[in-house]
Image (cartoon, rainbow, N blue to C red):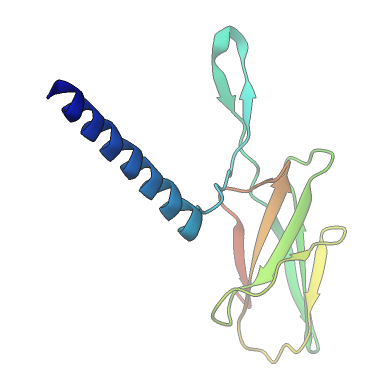
Length: 135
């Protein structure tokens, strides 16, 4: 009787584990997003070094073009800044900031809002810059 109970309990555990595994394979797991790198510290302690939030230097309109100038306040080699327009419903595609500047055409005087991220070692700013023109 004891062997039968152990065999049934083991079989149930295997079936449950198989069901969970199949469920995870079918639905998939979202990729974890890391917003801050962890850098090893002394004595086994981990120090968290956040990826900086970009800063707005200026936003100016000339005719139908708005030019945003942004800066990385703590740049490291390999850092990249990406931006996207966020005032038109769902966020637009990410585009790379070239030399701290990017432009939007078709400006008609209405509010234009963007979001800017610093990307460092496959991690991004925990708090991206969100700014609009006119402010």
